[in-house]
Image (cartoon, rainbow, N blue to C red; front, side, top):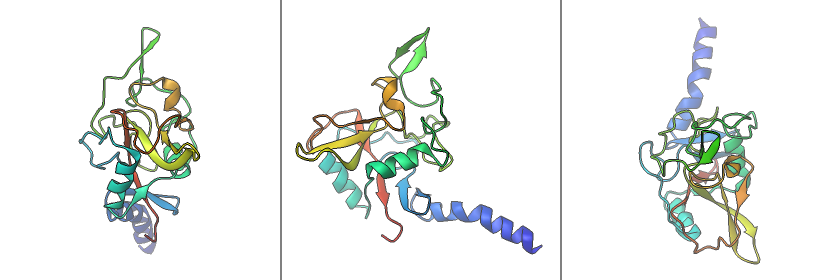
Length: 191
C-alpha cells in the first residue's frame, strides 16, 4: 500500500507544482517558463507587435522576466534535446509554421490562438515554442548595436527558422515591433 501511495504522489506532484505556478512549467529545476505565449492562456491570440521594452515591462508586471536565450532553447528542445521541440524531424502542419503543399513550402495560415496546434508541445508541456510568432528573449544579438534575439520562427518565415536552435536579431533594437513578434515570460524558482 505504501508503494502505491508513493507512486501516486510522485506522478501527481509535478503537475501540482506547475499548476500552482500560474500556468508555468518548471524546467529541470532551474527556471519556470510560461506554458503558452503571452498572455499565457490557451485559446487566446499571442500578444504581438510589441517592442522588446514593452515585452520586458509586461513580464515584470507579473513578477516575471523575459527568458534568456539559453532558457528559451532548453525549454524548446525538451528533455530529449530535439531539433524541433517535439522531435528531430519537421512534421508539416504539426505547429503553426510554413506547410508543405504539393512539394512546395507555403506560409502558415496566420497567427493562431495559443494551444490551437495541440501536438506542438514537448515533454515539458510547453506549447508553441516553434512557429506562430517569434519570441523576444532577454539576450543580446549585438550589444553594441542594442539588437536583441528572437527565437522560434513564425507562421510566415522560412521553415528553417522553426528549428529549436534558430535565432535572429539583425536590426531588432529595443523599439522594434512587428506583428510577427511576441514573447513569453520566465521566472527563477526562488523569485
